[in-house]
Image (cartoon, rainbow, N blue to C red; front, side, top):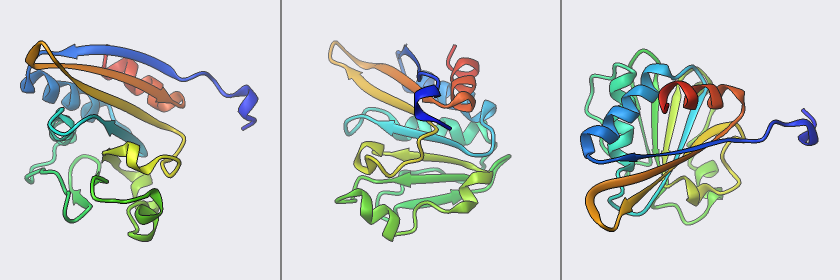
Length: 163
């Protein structure tokens, strides 16, 4: 596709007032996800990236325990669609993700959730749903969640799951 004719990204924002609400948002995304969905999660330590990932897993019908794969870099879980849960926290640069084999053709048939996606700048597929989670400085349980959907499929997912 000619970049000059590409549609502008779809954007939005919402608020979560609890861990349960953050998980519910993830659950809605997982329930609406299609093969090839890529979620790029960004936010500081403790913002709720893993809670959102756990919700996605719930929405996909994953029955295994979903924890942040910080030390193994990626966990794979069976569900309605296979969940590939990536944690880029320990990566020094995007090239390490490629060398570690964190992205491959299997993910086209599943859902990939990448925590600390900002550490993979330039290495993620262009079509994806970026989700930034920021703690509310005035409310310990509150989170501001903003999203940018790149590509028609991810825009449709955001509209369906994050409305």
